[in-house]
Image 1 (tube, one colour):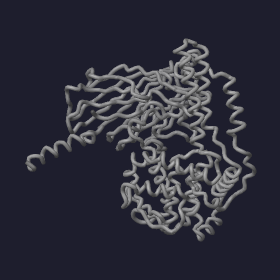
Image 2 (cartoon, rainbow, N blue to C red):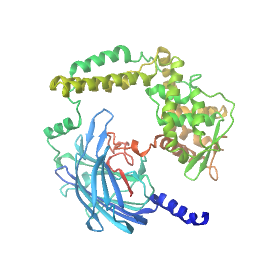
Image 3 (spheres, rainbow, N blue to C red):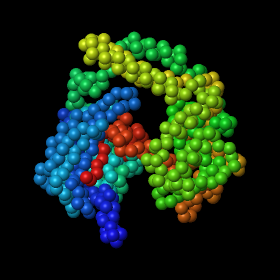
Image 4 (cartoon, one colour):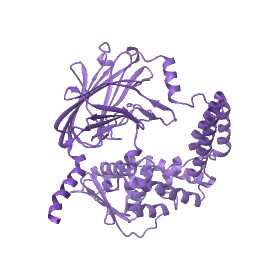
Length: 552
């Protein structure tokens, strides 16, 4: 009986891991910018199935929440779905922030090379920026679960636009990558190509043209779209003024005072706490700083492993902050011998809420905040939600349209004031002044001072703070020429090359960021934040569109 069950178990394992048995051999995207501000998109996806599957699922983000709270929604019309050049069986539906196109027949499987073609039309993809109009588009999204052997993007512009007036950029890699993708003119259009995209890597393009050649929708149409997407558009002025007064009286920080350079961090304030103090938030950069602080204090070693890093537990002697102690426990909770960042994906995400709470409790206990900033934000958010629900009751239960709408919008105003309501104590502002002084020192430190600091291990002490303050580039670049051997807590892969150390630290920061923010699939959606692809702010996955897909 045991022998007979072995082939069956092998078959079950093969079926369970079938999601890895497909590759996108070729992914071609054709973008056409029309003079009436319509974007036409054509996607040709050649998939090689090693195991029988029904088809693919294509997910296209169409709805985005901007930092201002505004909801921005694309108007997307699906024109055509083909399989090997013939009309395909498919089902299109909304799921969260995405339009999902499930291609294939549930009663039929395919195997081998299958070519899928999607054509769709998009409104609101072209946005004005001064005297120019920009397309910032994820031609291939960063949420594909299949590797892509070869990728190509073509961008066709209205023929009347002079070629010399067009500005363009391309990016490739995982979400957040600024690795350039070369775009060049060929056959009257912009063309970019790349090979070997791994799962989670994509292509983003940014193109700007003079505004006179594109007729954007009328102001009335744009206002209508805005009102359709945003129930809080007509914000009552008295609520806005009232919340402004409340913030001025109870949410505004005390005066900061004069900032002078600081050569050492404030005593008892770890780098993660310093990062929170600057913006009242715990973000992945603060997490990275905490990991580096564990290393510089001797509680872990960082080992390069291929394009990943392994965290090896050590028994250090220097005192840890309560947050750092909790962070060390979270890192090694499931893999005591030393996890890689790839091992921490999804797992570390689940522990972030507890680590954040630990950090804020520590800051309150030290008298830096009068109360937990997360609780303050939560109170005002709850008040806003309560007002909104009350307005909805007035609107639907009592039929009072105007009063109900006014109360709903008032609740939303309160809700969106919540992030600005936490305040620091005078002690907290004094520490913030020192942290900003430390940032000034890190930014301006000169080579001769760094040479002195190196002898005193001062550089390693400040490295986690540089990460938390987003100054790691400046600090590491100055330090690299002076580093003749790797730090005691760092094990390079192969020969030690000091000039490569800054790049490895930046990779470390990106991977730790990814490990902390890689959420289960249900937490994902459109991630455009209203930004532009120009001015040094563009990156892979940062534009509209994109998304991802998988086999089914």
